Length: 295
Image (cartoon, rainbow, N blue to C red; front, side, top):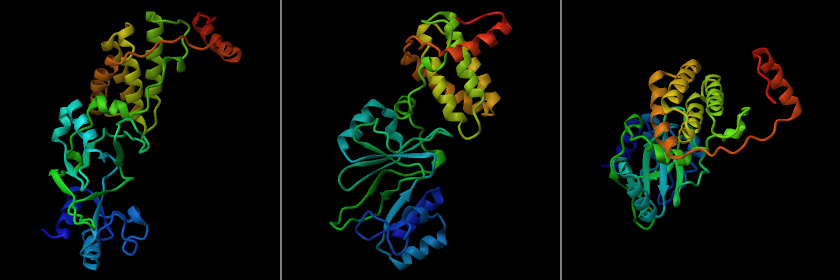
């Protein structure tokens, strides 16, 4: 199969492509002087590039919702595969040095930082921000990239396993970020924390709703070990997510795996820091309306 046929196939699946200098990993400076910003799915553009340089390598830019785990060390990939057997079914290609590019789907709305180093031996690529070299690219020494499990469209990719995604996300907010008048694991404090988390979920603007629900759901389910009812937490968070405008199916999917991960990782319940006098005065003023003062 000619390189252009591979290139057009990637584009049909939903991946942008850019030409690389023959035998190298960097963008072709004459064809794409602005690098990955010019990656394209347009067949006419792709045919023009490979007509101008038939030996060009292939740079593959996965869209925003696709995470590519780039393993330079083969042992790092083998270790993660043993930890998460479901990864075996995900599309992956083998690099000339024996490394692996693994393609996975992120939950809608989730954005990860490429600087995260939560998985030893792996870099975060794709997500519309970082390309990887793809088959049938051949390096100067003759080594090539090859698919071990064929690539599929972004919507058909396996999702990132929930425990793995939890490692890549920012940690959930600690309870001390939400003030309650009762410390420890009393039912009153647990309900206060859940109500505060739900308030923040319900008030989230579009574009941040999925990730916000994810963070606060992990925090809420992390309180189950302290006595919070998981059913109560799930029902309250679902109501808050729907109030924010998040589709019910998406919200239930987030809550399903957030419960799985959160219950397995209890959230520490350190004492909340003392409130500044001005904040305490404002809280008391609101509380007096309800007939309860916060001292």
